[in-house]
Image (cartoon, helix red, strand yellow):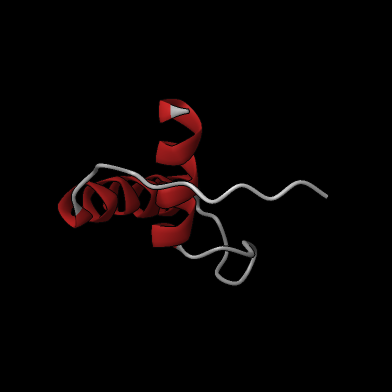
Amino acid sequence: MVTHPAMLDVSRELIRFVAGLMGAERTARGTRKGTRLLSFSLQALFAITWFTG
């Protein structure tokens, strides 16, 4: 297993905005609650880390 701590220079507002978009998309697709392991904010953080790295 490889671990790597990341430090992002992004605002909390960006994380909240992306999390809101993810939530709206899940609602539009009809995804059932409890089917995802991560919360919206953690998924948003993961996605932003992925795309900036």
